[in-house]
Structures are given as structure tokens and as C-alpha cells.
Image (cartoon, rainbow, N blue to C red; front, side, top):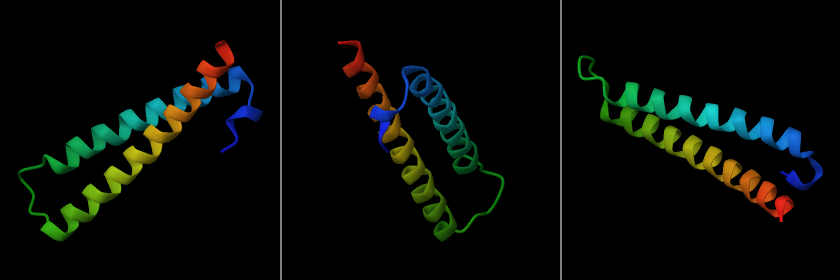
Length: 75
């Protein structure tokens, strides 16, 4: 994404949104993968774990990019 075209205000709002999304994904991952009372196939667990990891990686990358852009602009 071309963060350099966004205003500082837009970047901060997007950063807050992404951080909230990341928190939700991590919480969901913890809840889903720590359930002990339900039988879930190992294939399903591996698939969900992979999906969570991909989401976390994508969100973390976007957060880092926005933080870098904000840091660049503050110099």
C-alpha cells in the first residue's frame, strides 16, 4: 500500500484499526486453539493455525510499515 499518500491523521486511524484487528486475531487464536473440551481434527487445527499465523504476519507487516512512515515523517 502507498502509505506516503496518506495524511498523518489517516495513518494514525489506520494504525489504531490494524492494532485492534491484530489484538482480535490473537485473542481468537488463543480461544480457538486452547479449547480442550471439543474434538477438532489435527488437520483442522493445522489449517486454522496457519490462517491465524498468516493474518498475524500480514497485520504486523502493515503496522510496521505505517509506523515506519510515521517515524519518517516526524524526522
